Length: 375
Figure 1 (cartoon, rainbow, N blue to C red):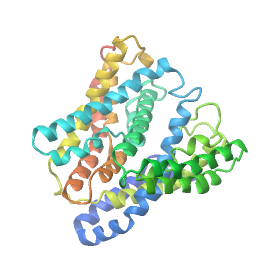
Figure 2 (figure 1 turned 135 degrees about the vertical axis):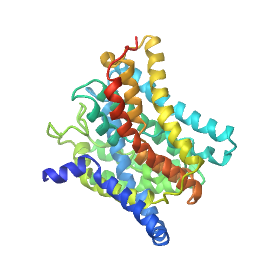
Figure 3 (figure 1 turned 90 degrees about the horizontal axis):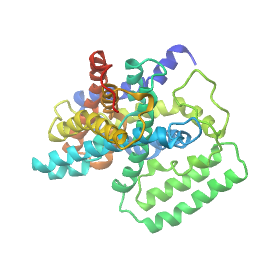
Figure 4 (figure 1 turned 180 degrees about the vertical axis):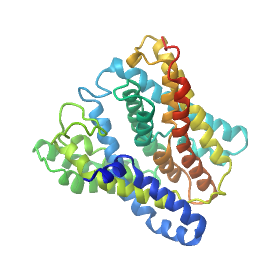
């Protein structure tokens, strides 16, 4: 891969390009854009995004291995609790604003500000903190935990159809059995897991009413993998040759292409589509995320847990501001929460505005890099 292409892939610039193209198209020719997006939305959001969430599941699985962020309960406890606080406080703030100001029709979007875009948050953290700084693994663990909880929220609270759990369980059983059989027989190719078990899982979720984009989440843990953690973003060491990492390596470029189309299909809103949902999402992310993360981390340490790397409170707050970049996942949650229309467009604008958290975090880092420690 050429250095120029590597920069594009590693920095998710295709997603930025797709988002920018969608915004331009939707504002210049809204009718043609609406037809285009409506035609592709199911294929992108319900089928192609399966592979995006598979990579999230891969990170969660490997984070529990030796060397991973979830391997040590004592080291992982503070950022895990911070992740929970970074979801609860924004959700509560969003719901409180909607209820108090009389916009009860917006309450269904409470989960949108829970999201953290792991890729863009990580890239922003790399601009703020030096390599190997403890704030970076703290943020990665927080984002991975956020993704894990987000998958649960998506499955439970935002089903694609009326949920039929008994039918889902019956249909999911063959998917799990085939994946377990492949694992027991030491099948090292990832294609049977994806093509057979993944297809059965997708059908089970779609028919059972759960969001089919999560189809590979229960299948990924069955793929043979190394017994130690490999950072998805670490390009300095060769990727292990196990099935799970070969699958992730194969997805590296296709997922970025998928994210281009995800941005192109979902991010096209009129620049005039600013309303209550926009400000509720923005405020919940910009205020709720850093406050929830900082307060939860402080309470965890006060309860006797240990802060990884003895991070100062100011740096934990910076991590919280960085985690306020909801972007990709917030857009996905918005499309799951609301049908096409004014409210969805307003919520999307809030998700897009969350990208402003990146320059805000960089600017704040100039003055908040040091400060009292949480002890």
